Length: 281
Image (cartoon, rainbow, N blue to C red; front, side):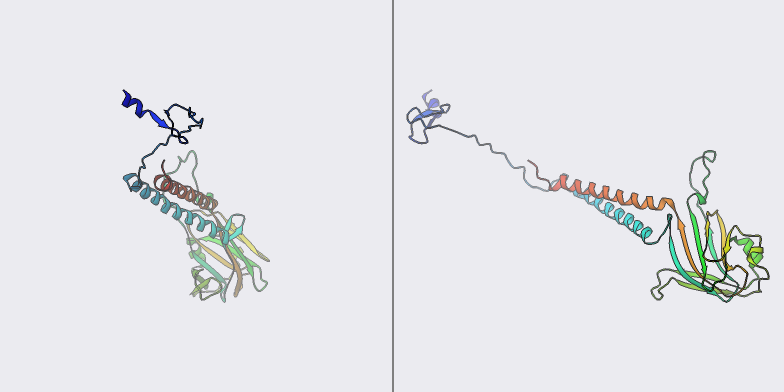
């Protein structure tokens, strides 16, 4: 019993007087006996466990996907900004094209839509023109009145197939050899057109007159020619042309990809931080 009592005794830190652990002041010298408990916490260690490995794999995957989507959205937004022609149209402007013939023809206007599962046609039967608009501008470089027309390929072949014209066969924006878009022409031999383009009753859409002419067209599925002429049908067509398209959903896609990329990237960083880096107590 005495041995147990001895274990419960402490000594005054000033005079060495014996006392119990519960004594707050030394009975001999009156010195306060403050004692603080020290709690030791065993470290969990910094081992590289299964949970951290999973966090790194999934966090890294989210980061890679987020960065890719972020750059895709940013690139799309950048392209639409650089090629912005106003009113939601993107494209190129101030392209000089000319021919010694009566017609400049671009044949490769193929409007094709793959089959897709949409709403029942009694609710909504969408047309390509609901999603895309095309704008062509032309201004004569020699003061002549300009004609711009869109014609279906079959009608074009029937009415212009035996006429002399220059076809725009290649259009390249990335050719560094030229300050303007690179154009190639293919000569089509034939006869002279004996009437003006206005007298031809075949155009899907047309504009003509003095100064800059602008044709805005909501296309339908099919194959078309774009024809540019002098309004009076005379040879030597020399015009300054702009071509642009309006796809309303394009800007929304770019913004959506950019914001989605930021969210996925942030999720990946959070997974790695909370799963690997953040200290645990």
